[in-house]
Length: 209
Image (cartoon, rainbow, N blue to C red; front, side, top):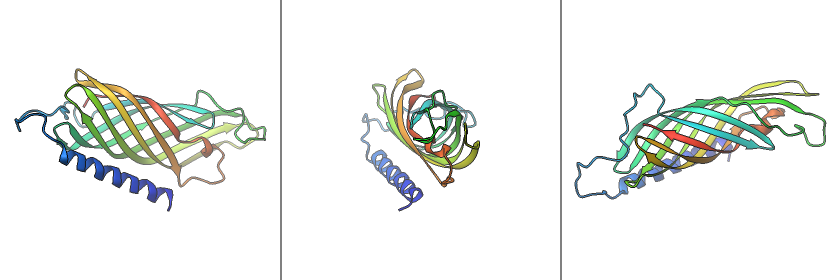
């Protein structure tokens, strides 16, 4: 099974599971007119409704990547919500491995990876303020590196990413931590820089829908 097929199968499975959970969620009170806890739609849809400051870690490469996120809630029931997600950001490495190829003298002088992604997410907001959820997104990845003794690389590829988050609602904003993983696909196999693209992703998020 290709990575692309595996990623989209995962996306379908997680989305189906989230939908089922939202459908089965029990009301928090006997009043069907009671408000939900998401209050989605406070921010105009054309403005960012969230932000993420994450860092990719792979093979000794440390690449912070701030992103802005747009969200549209298309299903909401009590404390559960399904959202359409679009986000994008840029990243430049702040720490690099001693060599790009083990056993060879190929220092990495600079590395970058930028991305724009779309996908789906699940959000759970409890009445006591605890917020958790996940999302699966995919989109183009632009990456490159300047390496001593090797030609500079500037390529594009695809990227599939999954992320879980846990936070707490403070007023009208949710703040928390997030962890995930991103995997490039459809890249140039002879590329050296692609060895450092994606990987484990950790960071902080804010949601002010």
